[in-house]
Length: 105
Image 1 (tube, rainbow, N blue to C red):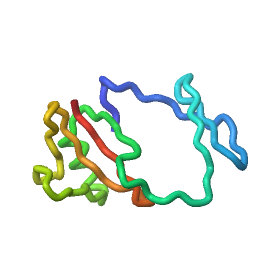
Image 2 (tube, one colour):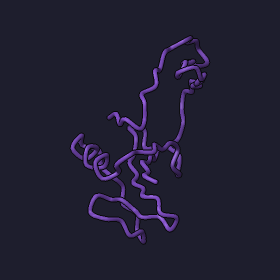
Image 3 (spheres, rainbow, N blue to C red):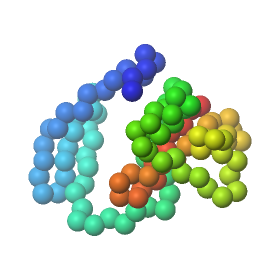
Image 4 (tube, one colour):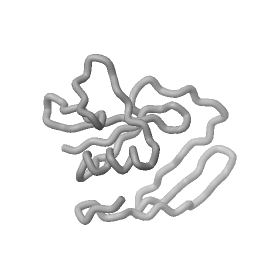
């Protein structure tokens, strides 16, 4: 999903070996270490700032992504939580069980 306020970056594979993948992300190096096993983290490991969290959450659900719900948090019907600082957040899991988030500030 692309928004005019957020230009698309390129992700180009630069090198790959037994230890890591190295990408060029519009001039910034991104190194991803290869591991054999990695237990799912119990915290949010990666998040994206989005322009319209309601639209993004709706798009995720249409793509069969389940948005997480947490006891004691006042989340709306989509699973979006309004933080005390004014940010709006929603969480979902990757295929390995890690928690990912979307945030609109």
